[in-house]
Length: 281
Image 1 (cartoon, one colour):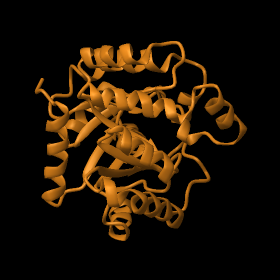
Image 2 (cartoon, rainbow, N blue to C red):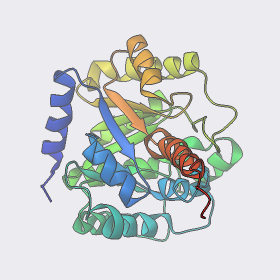
Image 3 (tube, one colour):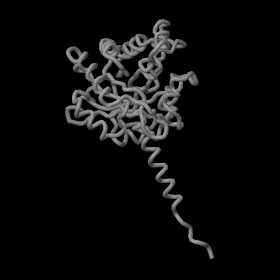
Image 4 (tube, rainbow, N blue to C red):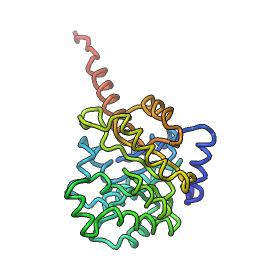
């Protein structure tokens, strides 16, 4: 496997942007989707517990329930399913950075030793609000812990990227040394199990502008991408990018694997079922 160190990944992404190509980060929960996304030219492949559940036919939101060890699952996905089949681009591990059962500094080193080229904060408490979010913050399992873990990973020389939903979250991650800020619009719509209510396009543009405006003076050198909400297709993202050209690319989850599979497998199955047998004599 080619070596993708932090500087190499950042330079690779910047070269794509300078060439006029949008970055495409594919969030994949299986070896086959990761392998094909890489062959299709994905800038990077990322995996995490949410992607795993998506590829079991469930909502990726299952990754926010206490039904598995998210970090152990991500480590195993990489070691057994992705790192051995993805050769063309970096592979990034989505970690539950607020995991109170682990020394996350040691775990980040373990993830790197397994062959991952970088880390991100997924699942993230950035998508949690209300009293539950407040309780997490007050008990040491809040967003600041995610900032600490990604800052540590950055100092180790790993590529780092962060889901953020507000200027304050994005600023904290930028100051911790992350390479890529991902503006998250919430769960996706579309397909068989998408959310019925998602962030509208105008609201997504407002969130994007508010974060970019807040960071641009000091952190314009960072890579800025977006994820989720009502963006489901390349055409959707192309229109979104025309409205906010400061963005460098898009992070696909359901659009990277669930939507294509839901469409192609159904169509192929129906085509086989449409074949008619001639009656034997």
